[in-house]
Length: 181
Image 1 (tube, rainbow, N blue to C red):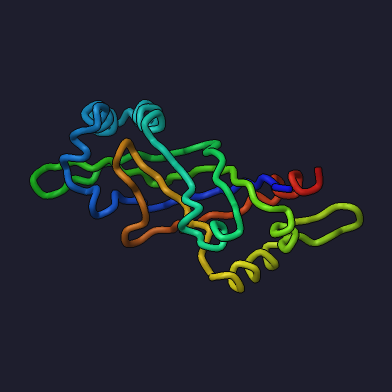
Image 2: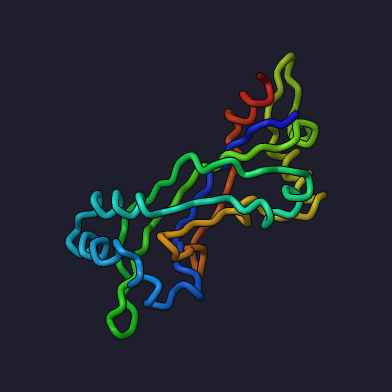
């Protein structure tokens, strides 16, 4: 039997990956000029709307080896959020759209017998225990949940480059509801 779980991810300080920073990739995006114009003209809500329509987030099970090994599956991205768009201008006047915060919710599915290792029983209900989960991850390869997170504006992949924060957490209430029902 499989159980669904939700991961909440966040990326603060995300930047286009080195191989994607080439300006021609940005200039190939059919919405690029409009997005840059909206940001430069302080139309942040409209810029976020346009970017969100063209923004993808996905979870790569293969980047978290133990999840791949134990048969976990990525089902869907439930939500993507972007905040505070701004521009970084590179040498030669090339403009790169950036966001202070990128977030996403991913729905995964995994074997109940594995997920039970992360749960404590309280009466007739099970509660998610982050300590048990962390121990299980450490004992089984030590990958971090955020290693599976992927974000892209069109074809341009964003990740942590330099300073910032990248994290991913299991939604406690979602996994408890899935496990107990």
